[in-house]
Image 1 (spheres, rainbow, N blue to C red):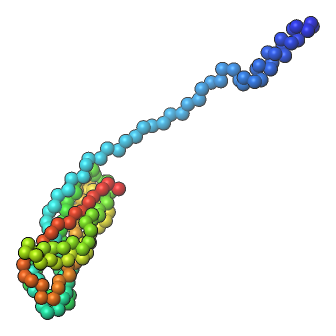
Image 2: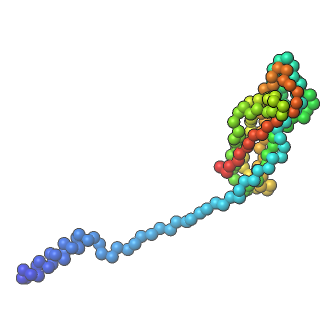
Length: 171
């Protein structure tokens, strides 16, 4: 073997070691793409939160409305007349079997006003549930809102009102 052919053979072997395997086959794996499309939630107020008719006295008190039943319970120096209390009721329409989270997005206390300068603090708002699943038949979810008002001693008479916000989001 002459010197020239030996050098060529070494050069070819060195190039093969440095460059790696020739013509390696590409590898692939399948993956699926997926998207869940939900209809936007639609909110409908069915009824307002109503603490009923309250008679005051020389002592302060409070009235609590249960968010599930709408039943009002007085305490301290207030008396309820009749049975006109109701929890606020909201219906949310959405995609069947999806979970919805509820929250109250208003800051407390909320001052209820009689329109002539007198106020009554709404000190608590309570939801009947914070999470529910959209019914597959009716495509709705219902949530109730109750609360607590603090009634001052000798609170001036009048109809006191203000608004609050309830928010729903898919979970």
